[in-house]
Image 1 (cartoon, helix red, strand yellow):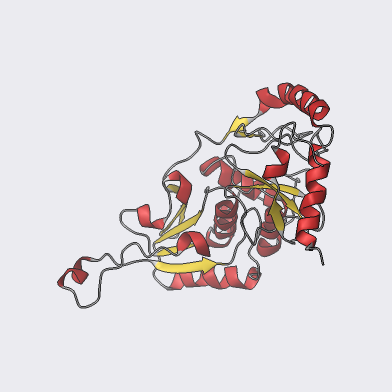
Image 2: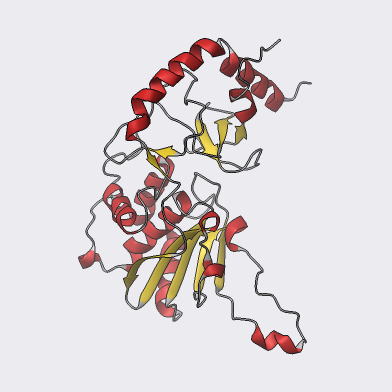
Length: 296
């Protein structure tokens, strides 16, 4: 029996490389139209940013690929949370029984979360975040570190939810998830929160209206759902895109179920979730970038 994943990838390969020369010409034309309104991630935040303080608690955000994350903070935070593959770092482990063990810094409380990139936590609902906010207030937590790889999508979700739950309601300057996300963006980075599913998750956890859809559907470009040029550009907040372009150095992924497109910083990763149907996405970058190669 032919592997369904291989059949799906072959189908994608044929679709994305058919009439490539003509589509490349059209894609470059589209690129010229939108290039001037994109904003780059290259020079956005680095390190660990103090996003907000409330009730004696300082909440930071950062990305492991941008010189951020809890283990780069000095002093170390009291609490660190984020995707499991990012936050679980045994970087201050000294051997037990050795004389030098007394010099090892006290690590923070670590909360690893099963959380696919460009998506939402697989199992955690509103109750988890309510209990976490309670623990922060009652366990003498003074510094919190939120993180993911780039410090944008998943980090932004953590920051938005904690801001809503920790900051007193009378100090809220937002009435819906869109306004809450913009609050975080104004204090951290304009790229915080990166997917429609993440905005919906914030609204659901915080029990506030969705507000403006910050991630409107994009029409198909000459290449399908994207233009395969790695430019590292991002849409500004006041611009509604008509086509998408992959981020610099990232790989194009496509959902096995609904054909939704997305990007990921690592190639051929398992468990990358679709932000529309939550099914698995696979790396199709090699088929997108085959140039004039023909499919037999």
